[in-house]
Image (cartoon, rainbow, N blue to C red):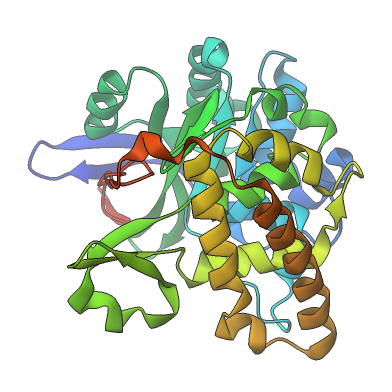
Amino acid sequence: MERQVDLVIDPLRQEKVSLTLPLAFRRPVEDVREELGLAPSVDVTDPIVAKAVALAGAARRASPRIRFAVFGGIAHRMTCPASNDGALGLRHDVHDMDVAVLLREAREFQKFLSAVREDAGSALTFFETSGDRIYNSLSGGGRLRWHMAVAQEGAQIVLGTLDIVADAFQFCHRIDVRRDVEQASENGWTLSPTHLLLAKGQFIQRIPRENASSVPERVLVPFGKRQVVIGPEAKDVRDLLALLHDHEVGEGPQDVSTRELEALLADDWGLWRTLGLNLEMVSRSSILRGLVPAARERITGRLVVLRDLIARLAPKRRFAFLGGPWWQEVDTTPSVDSTVTVS
């Protein structure tokens, strides 16, 4: 039997969100997955993967104007069988959802989020906290944050974050994703394999040199006398490896496109440098070495192709960085606790 409850988001301010329990979908997610043409390997028993699939199905039924493309770990689950296969060693837990929209459609998409549970079920409950609203009002529309109810554990509800970017994936480097959003419904509701590679491969961060021993596999190169730069963490390495396991490097519709990489990297020394360092790090990763021989050889061959391509490009506009960071420093944005109490 359904019941209406309040989630206490902020006990001090008595901020609450109304929620219908139990969390449920109106339509079986397996049916939605088939309608969207997603592979049976997409594991909709994972609650957040199920939400992404159900959200795509609801958007498809709602209006042609509701367009979005998933990226991040969920996108790899939706497009890479290897990301769903626990035995292979590339699967990892996912806790949040990342989507890209068009800036001109961002307001319409947020209206859709606030109402989608009425048609698709309480498992698709999305909401803004007061902190989200402050963050979103200051972001200029380029990046937005919502929250979602993921699962119920006794008297508590597990929450996840919905991170929304508009027009461009802009963290350490900027990647225009408007075409991916426009074509998402025909291409599995995710960014293209090329942009998924760049989204994971664009991460870079500097840390004090004395902290390097705590993340030895992630160290890329020294940065000045007192710092080093590090690359993606293990979960992102797994996603990169799964992508290269399941997508060839070439010019097929589901390939990592060498032509597109050439166009993007030829005039962007910073992104070229970061991606090159990160692919080198992935090539020597213990995660890659731990795979079964057939998977390791397939991925290694595709890494060689990508690294050879990057070595040939070498843009000439390095002088613009004058020895400083060649990437944009990214601040983390705190969100609400991962579990909240049912009032």
